[in-house]
Length: 236
Image (cartoon, rainbow, N blue to C red; front, side, top):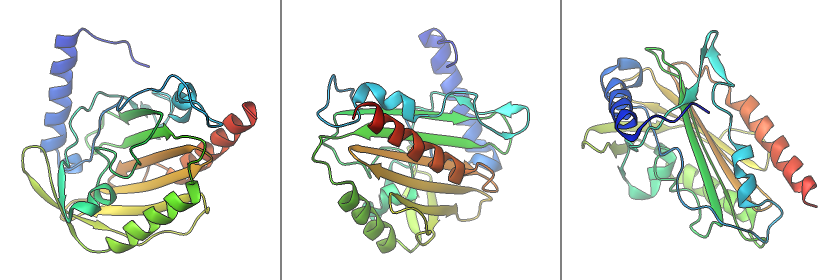
């Protein structure tokens, strides 16, 4: 992870990153979120523990969409899509706020990464643990139903009240442990690919954003499922 800077310097850097995203055509409406959100539970009665959640996040600078330009952790503190119409489609349209996650989590960790290119690439991730009685299949069914019910243009507002139109795609085929869809920002060359993963007592979300789907979400999904299985086996 990058070395932490003094608070004043960090705040200035965050404001510069946000300003760039608002003025560059390639990422003017990019959906961002808080790198470390929610609470950390000290323990859990499930097979995966809150202390293990950091293992379900991609390490900073491990991934590159463009050779020589790795994605690195950034404190993108503002969820640019702070509201949506209809409200129930907020989590389908954007990452910020983690609206798709049940509230009874025992721990939660998140990380946001981006490269320094003009046509920026982003990787937005969050994982959460739940009590051992969590029903992963039922949760994913509810997400499928929600995404299927939001197959129309969604109006979304940023924290500065800038309005955008987001068009979700239909559900994409894949593993029964994954719900996958994409979004397109109307009038922009910008796509976000979404994946909600649920297995045992953990839910993980991966969102990749770029002008051309160039961040490979399918590989990230496969790695995340493999790691979840490893964690389950390590505590079995």
